[in-house]
Image (cartoon, rainbow, N blue to C red; front, side, top):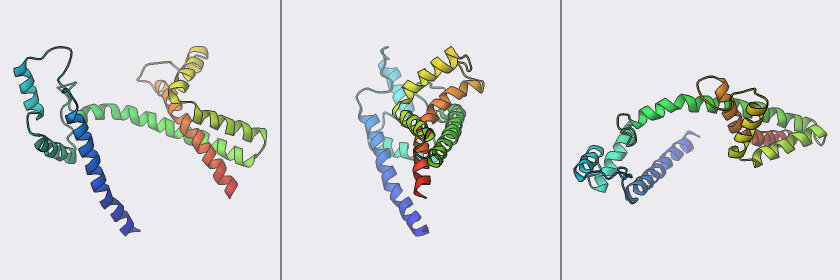
Length: 198
């Protein structure tokens, strides 16, 4: 088992290198530059910016520098926010992502496992049909449709949760439910199928 795990980890290295090289090539060989905008930048300012970010070096040297920084976990300075690093921007958004993921996970497990168990225990009854129809609808409706529908019903009609904003736990609930519903539907179908096979 350990040998297979080590073999898989060793196979991961060339795959990761190909992905990193391909993403580097796509970004660097695309027309324009990060400093292209509506405003025309004077050539001397552009040269200073390219020197600051290392874009004035040859591509192989840029790639080696990029790979070294990536291995150290240094994602560099943001071109949009020059006073901040990419690591700071990611760290700033990580708690929000984590809270949304936690709510989505809890919702999907709670609803999915419950609906799957009910569907399996009450097979071919109205409960089973309702649970599996809801699961089918949950899988079929994309999150960009479900989100506004939840805002419309839960926030604007029922006034249970705020429709927008951030900072309070109530603002996390609707986005978390939207993200978790699709997974809850899949988990419900898997749980029901697994229980019926036993």
